[in-house]
Image 1 (cartoon, rainbow, N blue to C red):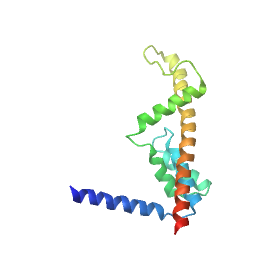
Image 2 (image 1 turned 45 degrees about the horizontal axis):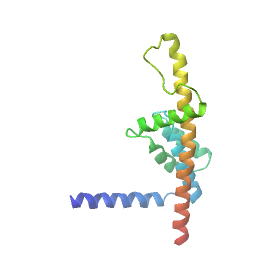
Image 3 (image 1 turned 135 degrees about the horizontal axis):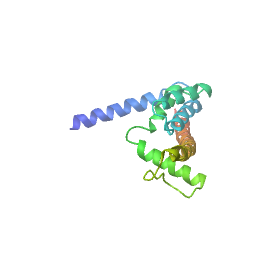
Image 4 (image 1 turned 30 degrees about the horizontal axis):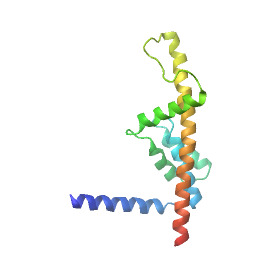
Length: 151
């Protein structure tokens, strides 16, 4: 059991070391992580990493950290993250109905309900992604500045 724990500590140290040794200035690395976190908040399964790397290339940020940042959404966080995004979008769009009612839906109403759900989820994803990306990027930026300033 102790050997497993020590091996885990060793892997964590290796990961942190890899993280600190990424190419680019602290601002490029932080921007890459922030862009990745932003893209990871969207419900586009399978496209989040591509979006993150593409946006990182556009803004000249670290592409690898952008790909890592998209891991904010994973099978363990999908449901809580997207439900939270939906609720934020519902609050921002200020509508009376908070959840889609599928119990009495007809085929004609399906498209309007789908747009209702999608618009709130996307609006919430944009806002939560911007906030989380800015916070994550700033945390990395100040950590890197402090780390490299003391060396």
